[in-house]
Each structure stands twice: as structure tokens, then as C-alpha cells.
Image (cartoon, rainbow, N blue to C red):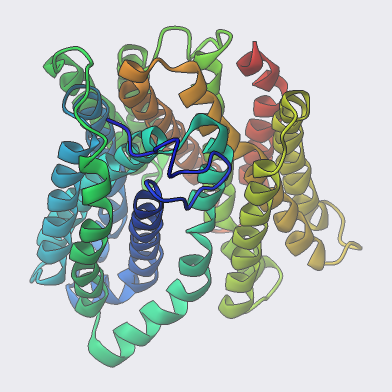
Length: 447
């Protein structure tokens, strides 16, 4: 049973009776997940210092990314077989347990375990929201829906770092985890009743073999992340092993033809991985570029990142208003091309000393706008190309591609970056190439 009712829910209104609860709950849950991600990243130096855990600092992030792969795989099957309500319950429980374990951790090992549980839960919830709310909202409103999802990141992106710093200084680092934990029941009360009304799934029986491949993919992602923390031949060997494991598992977890950009759905999933990796690798090193090379303060670097988040939201809102199918077909490759051009502008002051550092900010605004135009359209295309009984597994594949390709790109970035010279140009060149590849391949997603 679907929430929307043709009598009570106007076809052109996202927040209409019958679906407003699902949309409000989704915004609340996404905002909570966004704040957790941004706030924990801000607080982690204080956490590691308090727990004498600097050797496990990188693992506190890598474990979250690796276990999210497991969560995404499980969520896709749960949504197809038992419906999004059951999957959301499992995801919220794992996420809350991870927050509490991290918030009360007395060692860095316990904190890493909590972060791993958080990754598992967030992986489940990410897929569940796309599938559950995507079934509630009519297909014609999906562009607006995914623009709303993107907009839910804006406020956490603007206030998250400052609020996390305030919590750490005023109440201690544990308050960051526990504050988010307190918000979980509120988000659950908003989203779960709406997802319960979606009903159960009709997909095939749960494929436990897929979880084995997900475990291999997680191990590969973790190895890739670890490689970026090593030097010399050991880094290369660990990177090769991680890439082989993740790549082999990806062939089993992703739809056939994804890695070769077969037309239609496989290319949609590949494009998500490429553009997510381009953004993740460039965003990670942008503050280092601004503070280390150009002498900006951390506050100024944070403003640059926030500007990109705002233009991402603007781009998402613009694509939601495009009605013509022909225009939307042109907008997808144009958005990727704008992101690539923005990254080229970001690099320009590094290539010529006469160019002002302000171009970095201008370029990053373009990156955010370009990704905002194209990123939500991939979600729209995926649901449009997926039969209802396969929407869970295909949404899972979309987010798996995001996590796995981003892991590989961040590992490459770590290997390309030289801490001695703090030179980030090779990383930005790689990110620009990924965005350009997405633009070139995007017509294949449109058949």
C-alpha cells in the first residue's frame, strides 16, 4: 500500500496530505545523519587526544565507511523482501547503538567499534529512505524529492562545525555523540509511521550469499583506506589487495555491466560512483589547500566548504523545476561538465602564481552547482529504470558504487599527496578527471 492518495494528495505538491509525514520524517533523518557526519569529523581530534587514540584515528573513519557497505547491501534486500519499515527499524537500532557505544567509550578501540556500528546503521538508513519515500512520492515529484534530500544537508553543513566545537568546549566530546543519540527517537517517530504504511516488499528471498560479497567489499574498502596511511611498497601492496577485493566483490554486488558502463541503469550506478568520488577526494583536500598553500584560516576554509554546500542545494532546486525531458537529458552531462570545469578553476591558482586565490572559492561554488544539477537526477533515473520489486537492490547498488569508488579515490588521493610538500595538485587533477569522465559517459545513462 502506498501513502499517496489521488484524492487527498495533489500530484504537484510534495508536502501534500498522505505524504507530508514521510517527507518531513526524511528531512529530519537526513539532517540528523548529516550533522552526525560533520560534527564527528570536527570533534574527532579532541576524541583521539582524550582517549590517546591517534594511531587509530584513520580507522575511526575507515571503519564507518567499510561497514556502510554491509548496511547498504542488507538494506536493499530487506526493502525488497520485507519493506522499508523493517529495514528502517534495523538501521535506527544499529545507528543508536553505535552512538551510545562511542559516547560512553573509555578507549579508542571501543570508539572505533561504535563508529563501525554507526556506519552499518547509516548504510541501512540511506538506502531505506530512498526506497521508502520514493515509493510514497509519485514519480513525477522525484526531482523535487531528491532536491529536498540535498537541501537537508545545507543547515548541518553551515552550523555543524560551530555547534560541534561549542559542544566539545562546553560539555566535552562525548556530548557530540550523545546529542545525536537523543535525536534518534525523534527522527524515528517522524519517519517510521509513514514507512509502515508503505507495506512489505515483494522481492526475492534474502540472498545471504550477497552478504559474503559485501564483507569482501568492506574488507577491500578498509584496506584501501589503510593504504593511504602507509608509505612505500607496503602501501602499494595493500592498495592493490584492497582494490582487487573490492573490485571482485563489486562485480557480484552491482548490476551486470556497471563497470563497463553498459547503457541505462548500469551507467547510472557507475556515474554515481564517479561523481561522488570526484567530490569526496577534492573536498577532503580543499581545506588543506586553502590553509596550507594560501594561508587562509580554518574559518575561511569552512566558509568555502559551506558555499559549495549552498550551491549544491541551489543546483538541486533548479533541476527539480525542469519539466522538459529533453532539457533534463541535456542537464545531466552539463552538470558533470560544470563540476569538472569548477575543479579546473580551483586548480588554476596552483598553475599560475599571478592568478588570485579567490578563484578557488569561485571554482568550488561551480563544483557544488554542477553536482547539485546532476546528482539528484541519478536517483530519479534509478527509480524510473527500476521495477518496483528491484528498487531496493538497485538503490543499494547506487550507494555501494558511491562508497566503493569514493574509497578507491580517497586511497589514491592519499598516495598522491606528499605531506612534505603539501602539494594537492595531483589529487585535484584526479578529481577533475573523474568528473570529466562522468560527463563523457552520462549520455549512456539516458539510452
